Amino acid sequence: MKAVGVVVEYNPFHNGHLYHATSAKIQTGSDLVIAVMSGNFLQRGEPALIDKWTRTEMALENGVDLVFELPYERATSNAPSFASGAIQLLDAAGCASYCFGSENGSIAPFTTTLSRIASVQSQYDELIRESVHQGMSYPKALNQAYSTLIRHSSDDDETVDLSLPNNILGFHYMEAAKDIGSSMVPATLPRLGAGYHDDVAHNTPIASATGIRKEFFQRQSTEYIRQFVPDSVYRSMNEWLTKRTSFGSWDSFYPLLRFQILRDGPERLTAIADITEGIENLLYKAAKQSETFQQFMGIVKSKRYTWTRIQRMLTHIYTGFTYSNRAAMQIPDHLRLLGMTSIGQAYLKEMKEELKLPVVSRLANFDSASANFSSSISDLYAVGIDPVHPALGLDYRTPPIRKG
Image 1 (spheres, rainbow, N blue to C red):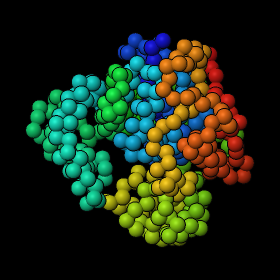
Image 2: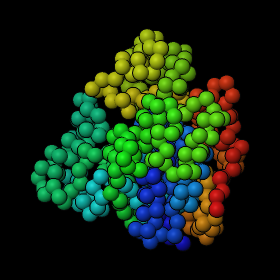
Image 3: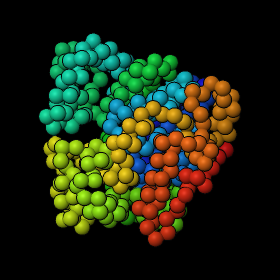
């Protein structure tokens, strides 16, 4: 059986994701779709709207056949590390190809861009290092180095625009696949409808996950986002709200985060991953002064520290993820199975001897730093969602979800 891999967050699953899964399978001539999906905390440094088990169920009901979890240390990392971890897992899962959405929509410019950067790699890396050291965000540093060395000296039509978020991730997927010598064939689909950060437009069925979340929190009703998600997802979101206090957001998690910052103080915060350059003092000061998350971010955000970079720090504070934790989790060591269809199950049986990493269905049967940490933060997520009646122990009690 031939599998195509996709890298996803599904926060939440929407009509654009359905198009992606369906079209990726058709475009690559694959028999099934394998998703590597972030768990309960995400790449932009925020708690997921809905837990990973519910999002897995959404995926399996809408075109995905296997869902593996992207471990916390990669799911909450910067774009190169995020992409590298995801590609390593898709490669280990035996995918023949992988498919990503992009603003560009064609794979050839990505291939050309990779080749041209490789020809000036040392200069390119040095420019990025210098810019980041001077306080520029990584995405801006990457784009500046790229524009300086590549784009301004070539035909723009032959290269990809690395100022756009999905193009950036796509580039890093291809870079990661090249670095590990993967035989997976890359494919891309043009991103439909709304841009990555756009608000929803009610004259179209396609909206970004960012726009959908913003619309829900402004309206406080799932009815206003119904047209942008499959019917099964709409039902799942409403069912979620009948059983829990809220969807996941920093606004609801902030009281617990604030407690942790105030309890630990600046000195202990320095051990937390991504805390650098004395920002621990500013975080502590902001926590003392701010009653809401928006007030807190208003104090901390600056040109040097982007919203996303700060949120990643806060995620690590909330979960207790330290520099030493990160050092112990550099290389993916398992495929954490969250769910499968009957086709996915048949694929695992057929490929049992070909997979490059062990498939873990139950964490109780597997011991590793990464797996153990992922389990512990699931409980922290549950407490943030519902402090009074948290659903604890799900990582040990929940078997892989089966559909179809």
